[in-house]
Amino acid sequence: MNVENTKAQMRKGVLEYCILGVLSQGELYPSDIILRLKSAKLIVVEGTLYPLLTRLKEAGLLTYRWEESRSGPPRKYYSLTPLGERFLGELDQTWEELSQAVKKTTRRN
Image (cartoon, rainbow, N blue to C red; front, side, top):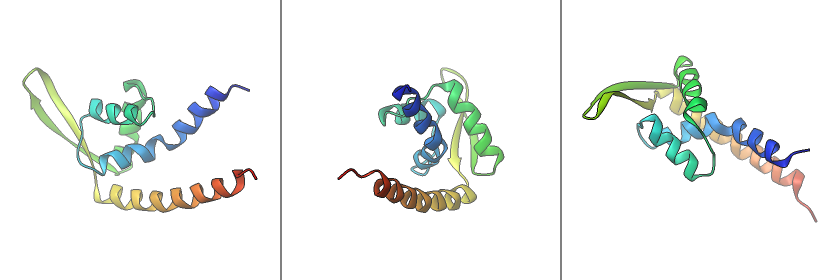
């Protein structure tokens, strides 16, 4: 069994939650989202991020606005919707419960 594969799967499982968490701090351009996730060691590439942003937007959890750029095409900035904020609050509670359950079942004496 490959531990790196398991670690990658664990990261993927919490990626949407982490994206919502990052955006709860304010609107961001996708490359800024990637930088924040990478700095937290949640390695993400654009090819992974964009489908997740689209799925979260289609679910009504995110919105975006266009901003003109001085150095290229307009940029899309994402932010949480009120529904996204409520959803994130529910995920925060679920994460706490899950985290406690995992700690409780994996402690070694």
